[in-house]
Length: 298
Image (cartoon, rainbow, N blue to C red; front, side, top):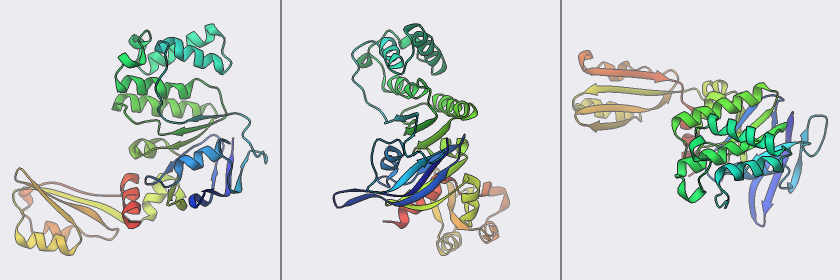
């Protein structure tokens, strides 16, 4: 399903949550919606899902439809079910049209996939926070929809489960589904998304494939780690270049965002080479890009 967000604005009284936002989500793709807190991501997802009406603008699907024919919106965590986890999940699956037998099979598959089979007969108050988050995230993979809007599907999950969720999202994309994901776990977003849309203070900042956006920043992330205390000359050079300096247990790290034509020689020429433990000069991550956007807006 292709989604066209066409100049949507959403106001809640005097507060503008989304301001003239436009972007395209291609059919059979994964789009990441990222930005600082209160940027307007959740409101945008709800508008795309048809759960909120925009104050102005519109969202179009496929051949000009103004409401998605089949969609699934995952609103984040909410606890409080009274049945044991297995029965609760089966009931949820039947709500989406599965027979009881199909629901049992799907819940068994999800429990194995997300590693909570041993908890199916437990109640929510006896399960750990991480287990409850696994169960909640698994809800996203029960319905059969053409468009999935997932709001923060990674919080509280261990690295293995985060990878499992990412794999499940890719599997849905490979089956022809369209995925829109909002998350602050930008390492996962960077790894699975075909395109990202960055918003801040209700407005579009930039959009494009992750690697294209990272190159377009014309910046690099520099870091050098060396053994020992930094000489005063090195402190002065780092300060002049706008770099940060950290000393822990007699190991010094100098790091920061630099321009793409930055040369590390100004730093390395001061240090004996046998004291240098590592040197890194790379493209900034999505997390570092969002951090920079958030800092600029303060």
